[in-house]
Length: 207
Image (cartoon, rainbow, N blue to C red; front, side):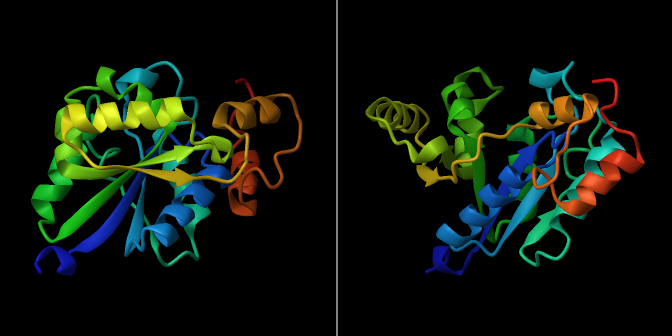
């Protein structure tokens, strides 16, 4: 009975350099399909696996995220990671949230490529102890190999993993930065507010 009363909150983290419509559609789909109360959109602080890949300053990544989710009442900007100093690890973030909000069940949204690398993450078993994992599959593909791997990982860590079909959008933040740096259009790749912010602040010009 207690479990039924808990809030259901999704978490979608990322460097968001910049945040694009693919991120937003994935978060919206997770919210809808799993009947979440809200989704925390969480810009990464200093992720160790992307030490040399973050182009925009943290303040810009945060502001672009804020602009992108304005108007969506069930999206909420979370600064949990950017406000921490040093490297930020997922297990620490999830443990902090679960300790502070014992009335909440967390659903951590990641891509299939990230799931297949999760054994290389720091303390992966502690991630599964704190959250249900929602795995985005690109192009609506649920290959037998992927299903088999998911079962293996779930068994290994005693966790819950569910597949989340995503729209067929082949889009990455790297691609958007390249388009900006070469003077090409990014209209509809990002929201209008984010597009204007990028140009106003001259982001990614020398990417």
